[in-house]
Image (cartoon, rainbow, N blue to C red; front, side, top):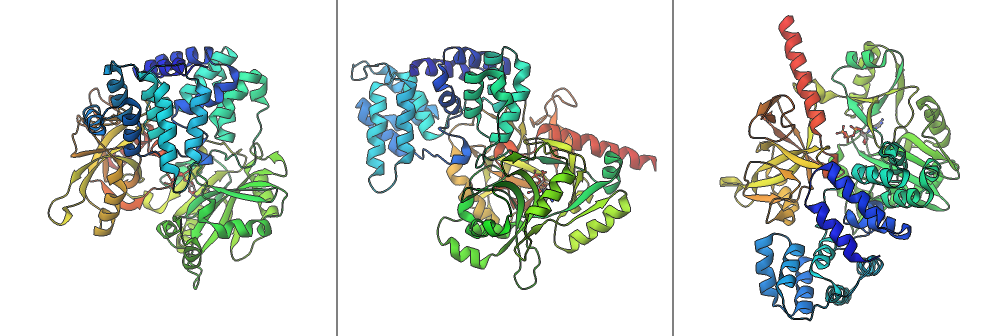
Length: 588
Ligand code: ATP
């Protein structure tokens, strides 16, 4: 398949933000795509080569790309840099430079998607001392044969700046429309995606085998399942009312969610964001074959840091010491953990997702051989608020952050947040009812003691419909000197010259960031504001949601991606909840 077809389609997609138009562009693109490249196209449109959990990273630095453009075009690196500053995007700048160039060194020959993909893959695999030179060679060989628009997208993929704004759901809409003739079949594709986290595999399945193949789509060991998430409740009474009968209450431990895959002599661990985190927990990898009494299995557990002397749970932040590439053995010894299982998704060749909670829990208890290091999370059945209250107190005393309440007959709903699981946290007793996880989109330089760091951050929610990040507040409190310093180190490399097109904000911070980092914030109230864009027009025309007295809790949510941040729908629910609370109080 000619890469020019793809580049043209990307160009059309880039010029719209409307979901229906995007979907139509995708359908048109799939019409022109041979089945054997559907998976590759699906990855490339998201700026990837493989699903995230495989960790295939291109890792090409801007400097190297500039050198490669210079080598292929004969234009001085300095001029390319100037154009880049003007455009704010190197891919775009390269395409401008190349189209202005009249000489014929840039003979556009037909390059294929297959060739681009293969070369990008080779680049991603390169390691070691000579890798930079080799990368240069590969990149300039591609650029030599690429037309300006093709060069633009090759560079965007290489640099990780593809921002077509195509959400997974839009891709699935288009796949359903193109290969099954009905967009409504997206539901079935979604199920396949939720159990595999691999959109390319889903695309290939529906393209080659149609709806039948999608219906037979199987979970696979070492393909992570997208996690089931919980709704929040503010009180035990609310939970009892929602469930209306007996339910399970489990400790909600404050650690890291780990999805454990074991079978065929291999063990792998995936995070809540489905990244392979096996390297951070060699202790879990080593012990799983002893702990798990099954041929193969996929299980979910919370890995929690503990005080070895007292056995007490320690806060989530302690686990961050494990996030290192080197000297992991030292970190394992210094920051011991326990593994607390709470679900089983697959066992001995069969999916457990459709089993009710009670059966999955019984199976989990059978399969996990408990010891000091590993056990099933504490669980008790409850049916009234007094029982929940008692168990809540136990759980808080044991160092956990509250309870997870689960419907006894509920299946495991991969990839969705629903009311079959409810979380009740101690901190929900505050005014707002919950903390929010917000994306850092901008920074204001600090003054006085905060000189040299970002004293205030501009934060955003995730808007699912538009697949954009919408400003909701500035936060300047809750930072310790240490956290200011840490945030500065994390955020500095994320500075971009121009506001990312997926960011919606009227405020002009000193610097814009790539919307990637998620931090936790509490606030006293959600108000309406003409300045912010979160949930714009939801409650009142021209007004968005804003936070009153926002405060950073100190938690950097490493395990969350920007799309996992609090959504405008969640904020709207909290907003209406607080109004109800105010109203109820006024009646008392
Ligand atoms: P939070 O901000 O509360 O951690 P979240 O958005 O990360 O929420 P939720 O689904 O809202 O995810 O909360 C569930 C999280 O709580 C899980 O991701 C998991 O890490 C953790 N957890 C702790 N104990 C349990 C348990 N018993 N069952 C399920 N999840 C648990």
